[in-house]
Image (cartoon, rainbow, N blue to C red):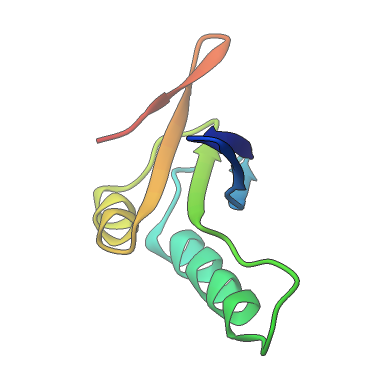
Length: 88
C-alpha cells in the first residue's frame, strides 16, 4: 500500500489473511497469524515487515477470537453480501 505524505511518497506494508471456512473463526486462527507475523518481523533486517494486519473471513468470528485480535491490533472483516465489513 503506498500513499503520499506531504511531498514524500511513503509506503506501508499490510499482511492480509483470508479464510473461507464453514465454521467460525477461532482464537487459534488468530494466534497462528500473530505468530507468523512475529516470525517475519523478527528476521534481522527483513525485506519488509507488516505495519498492519487484516483478517478477512467468509464466516463469523468467535468472540474470543475477536477479543484476541483487537488486543493484538489485528483488524477483522466479515463477508457481508458482495463486500466485507469491519467487525467490532
